[in-house]
Amino acid sequence: MTRRRHRTTRARACTGKHAHRDRAAALAQIASLRRMDGAVRMAPYRCPYCRHWHVGHLPGSRH
Ligand SMILES: [Zn+2]
Image (cartoon, rainbow, N blue to C red):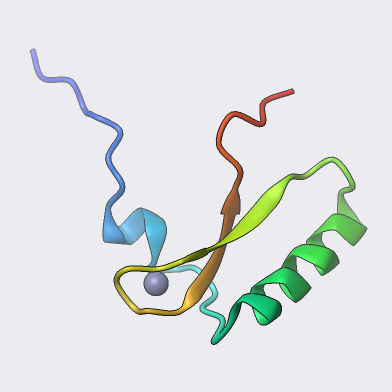
């Protein structure tokens, strides 16, 4: 049997995500997301692939 590991692939971490040129822009996106759903916890992170900033969920923020 083969099991899929949870790995951070480019498809997951970069492709398809909005790329911000700096952290402030990523934070602005988070602010707008929170306006729609106050419960969502997200954080900006520097992408090692495209060198831009993406927005992702904080680890260990389950409810
Ligand atoms: Zn990226």
